[in-house]
Amino acid sequence: MMGERGMAAGMMGRGDPTARMENRLGAMKAQLQITPQQEPAWDAFKAQAKKQADAMQSMRTTLFEAKGNAPERMEQRTQLMQARVAGMETMTAAMKTLYAELSPGQQAILNQQFGAMRGTRRGAPAGAQ
Image (tube, rainbow, N blue to C red):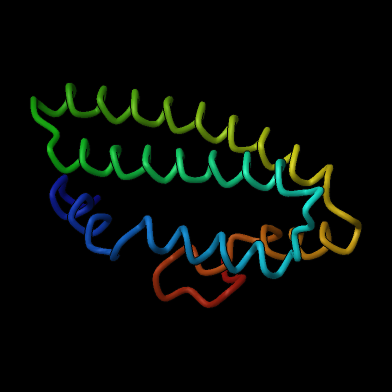
């Protein structure tokens, strides 16, 4: 297991997460060709995505600045992970609302984008397990 500072520092050093998220959302909106009628659902999804990005940045900072002994830091991590699960549940609801507004073609594009956790591990080729 990586040391506390090593893991947090690695997460902090991946560039500007807000800019990356904005780029991904912009590309997704363009690929989906969101219509004016779909804008409210898209805007709600985008707002939730921004909220999640902010929460993740806060989590990274908290991990980086963790204080206390090992059990106390583990408890902090547990609390952060519980908050992360709650955030993902909210994000899932926003995704479902958006998805329901999309045409079958748009849904197919979104399914492809979120179909697999491609490139989630460093150095792993897309689709590698």
